[in-house]
Length: 222
Length: 40
Length: 247
Image 1 (cartoon, chains in turn brown, green, cyan):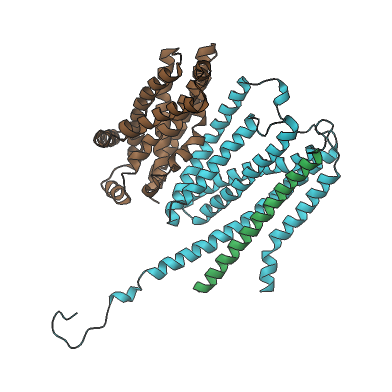
Image 2 (cartoon, one colour; image 1 turned 45 degrees about the vertical axis):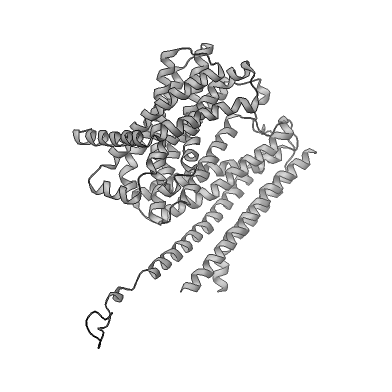
């Protein structure tokens, strides 16, 4: 990565975070929506503490995978075709744009995971164990989901941004992340090996990044 | 339901759905060809 | 015209013949010692599952082919295989459920294979949904190709994760749906005949579906060019008579 690429990535990240500060989609919409989802489930299935403690972690990660990925959608919908054309004419490397969008998505997702995580721990009385490993899991899933979500969002035209298409595209492909994250928690709880799951999630990250960066320019040239 | 009943259900689903798919595909193809002829 | 119709109907004839053979063998083959008559469901379920995976692979190849060559014919192959693949994947899942209910008493077992097939189904559906969102053939082809590549790259990882997950939670071996113990050669022949028949069905459906894409693309190109003004329309005859600015 040369200095030009890095500064382009930084510019994209700065633009995305500035947009979020102005519109507050993640803070005012996506996070509350995730918290709401966690809140509704006990209303539907019952408030038995043992049951909630059992399903809490899994429910939390499902909410992250399905609704957290909306973090990537809100931003892509802002870019109209004309804006994207203008930006590409200015010489923005599409691969740098993808990396930048993924990184800002990952950052926003991490915030999402932390806030919604606190809600989950409270509502479901989840035991927080193996704190360093959990933090690492939060970071890895945020990056992986950020990469997946940004790639999916770049495929969906701005007119479909309101639909559930991006979550639909991401959900089946995020299964390894979902299983990895939940199995890490289970492993910490039961004293089982968590390294294979961590490695699997990192591989998902890398594979997604490679596909995203590799197809960024061909995609734009369509 | 007897075992043969389940087998019959399975084959009805398999070949029945296939027949439906072939029928709709043929219909779509015919409609498309007709539309193309019109445009010529 | 008659020769056209004849040449166009070879796919259907091929389907008819291979299905007839497969059905005969399915009826004639003996019941399995463990599963009884239910083994006959395998003669359609296994081929459907095999085709689901084949179709997925073809979609991957078509996606790669388009990104490399930019020829729309590759995209048509990818898209046709995806639509047919959705059908076979859904069929495999449905037939798996019909087999599971009398065998295990439940419609769904969450075993690795079934779960993986369900994930594949959703990936396919997403692929088709994505294609609906773009009007321009090239934009649609490019986006679909990227999704095809991404799906193919991640599916092996999905496979690993699901298999590991089920290995951890493996209950008594009773709930592991195994294939038939192939003791009688006729059972093997019935299975193979089913696989051959379904492969013939796949090829025939592909031929027709690709043709449908070709005709639809030709229609779209025609309508597009008809909308555009003719090149000479920008030149109009000079207006005679009238003063300045009398338009």
